Length: 199
Image (cartoon, rainbow, N blue to C red; front, side, top):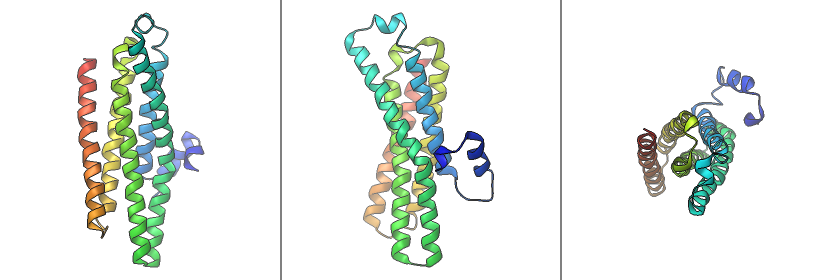
């Protein structure tokens, strides 16, 4: 599996004539790193006086965000392989020229890209709940993680759109696109709100 490769091996695979891993897989990795950076910030915040003196409710909100980020990180890690495999299924379907298989593969690929978008956006929401009790000495890592998560959304959104272009089921296409558009708009707003609060 791609996610089991060393960092050097993965980069070498990207830097090759193979179309996988491509942008969607890389986006998932970037998103996972964004979530991980914010969990690092959380780990470096819980021993600080600001956290220890905060109300129980604020500590609980912080802890929930920390826990949720791990779930999103894991889901994004799965997307590293999920995106690549779904693309390979699309290519295989086009090679055998089976229209039903093509449509199924396109739908699956769009759905996997949408799942990456969804998880990165949810991770951004969790990040906003770390802000109040965050260790001020590592806020630059929170900013970096936020930018990476939003970049993941932007890139994977492009993959959703690309796969939906050839989908013939208009109702399904419109529903998936509407959901993707919602997450894209939310992620942009969440990123700006987070960066504004950090300033």
